[in-house]
Length: 322
Ligand SMILES: Nc1ncnc2c1ncn2[C@@H]1O[C@H](COP(=O)(O)OP(=O)(O)O)[C@@H](O)[C@H]1O
Ligand code: SF4
Ligand SMILES: [Mg+2]
Image (cartoon, rainbow, N blue to C red; front, side, top):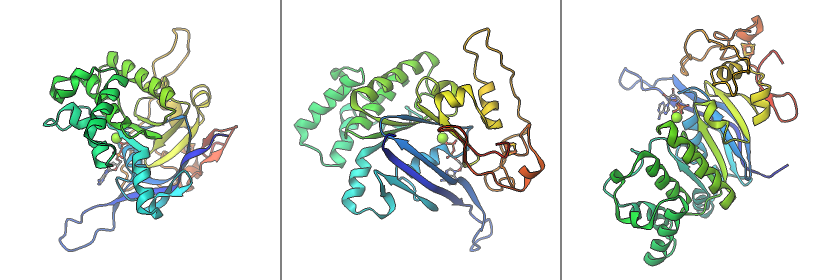
């Protein structure tokens, strides 16, 4: 088995809700991430999928130390991020980079492309002005842009090109891991494939490990070695690409997959329509969070929380049917 470069143990992030009555503390919270454990192996792409609001971005920010967990830990190369010394924290910050969803909002419009890509190098005091400029030109080429783009501003680029600039920024410090949070969701379908192919090429070239977040199972299918499915702050199923696509076990995974377009006209697939909306993460349902919408719910599902358990070689599922 490959080495786990990131290990997440019982990770939780509960955001307290402001009490409308002044000076009274609220004891309610949004359970954005609610007890999640998984590993990311060196060199793989782990997909994290689930509907909007299920906690994907919060998980990304926890792993990247942009927010502190309410409980649980994130281990990077076996070390707990919360108890690291300053040097180790700086190193881990360099090693885990992020590409965000919105290529329009994530680049400062007043800065040139050269300044934007050199920024992470300046922050971490890598090289001098000359070597940084050389690196900027190198990175532009690596992501399929030209060095004459260096003096231009973000508004002069298309969405796909801006995402390439964001990827160049993420690569600047030679990271081990890149967390891609819905990196193609804001792009036209025709451009999505180009960015995904670029990410795949870069992974090979620089031995990168990816965490690839998407609400769309159709996007992750071209990208991921393993897939984790999230629902209301929890992982309900995790397995290899084949296990999840050929043999989904959790009723929620089955419903999500039934909405993915067929690969061939001969493929038989019934669309599973779920009743109701995703419940609020402030008051998640008792027992299995999915029980009110699950077509196979049983009596015990209302009261007992299903644990994520091994079923098959690498597949794990949180459901009382198994
Ligand atoms: N800073 C925050 N303060 C309060 N609630 C938040 C904050 N960030 C996210 N949330 C809430 O946490 C839940 C999960 O959000 P998010 O992680 O963005 O989900 P996703 O990326 O899957 O759409 C949502 O209900 C969201 O409103
Ligand atoms: S535990 Fe019960 S309600 Fe939850 S997914 Fe399984 S069958 Fe459905
Ligand atoms: Mg998100």
